[in-house]
Amino acid sequence: MTRTALVVRGGWEGHHPIEATDLFLPFLRSSGFDVTVEDDPQVYADADRMAATDLVLQSMTMSQASHEAIRGLRDAVAAGTGLAGWHGGIADSFRASSDYLQLVGGQFATHPSKRPDEVHGDQTDNYLDHTVEITDLGRTHDITAGIDDFALTTEQYWVLHDDLIDVLATTTHPVQPYHPWHRPITSPAVWTRDWGQGRVFVSTPGHSLDVLQDANVRTIIERGMLWAAR
Image 1: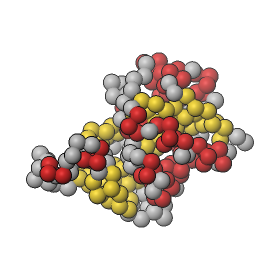
Image 2 (image 1 turned 30 degrees about the vertical axis):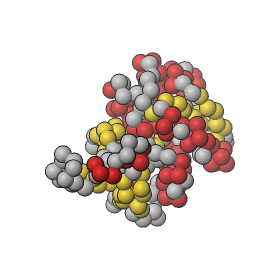
Image 3 (image 1 turned 135 degrees about the horizontal axis):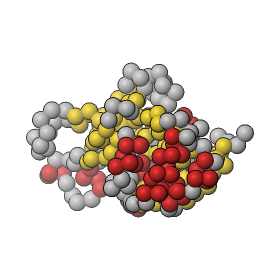
């Protein structure tokens, strides 16, 4: 039986929403999904369309969505539609909507930068060597089972979150003399969330196309989409 996937992409162009989601469209189609693409979150307000959607793949950094759109997304997920995404496309979307933030369960706060003498004024200022560590839950979860801790050099998300999320992987921000915090901060890097009859999946790694093509990151996202789908 064919399932339906709705890809909603747009927002800040720095995350290459078209090229990034295009990386995963062949996987979705080969996994039995009929895929459609929209560039406006207002599609979430179409109740009939959303009820017929088994998976929403969202890549919409920042941007805005109407109250009706957010309510439609929340209602759809609660009724069983899956929601999945990575990086700012899901964890830094619709900042002005507390209802959206509650649905996703975690919100980008910052990505710490390099030492002041290494900062040049471009995106690479925030590319840090760091480790994504699989949690005990993650070692047995369908999304991350068999994946070991792995290293990345990219943005390391600091996430504000609640304890309704199930954390499959974390990353720790160390104490540095040029930053104002005084003890290491551990943030969720991969998490899931049960919401009504639906499921939410988030991977914070995914800033750029090369990160999305990292074998570990790509596997986690592919598995995460399948896990979240109705």
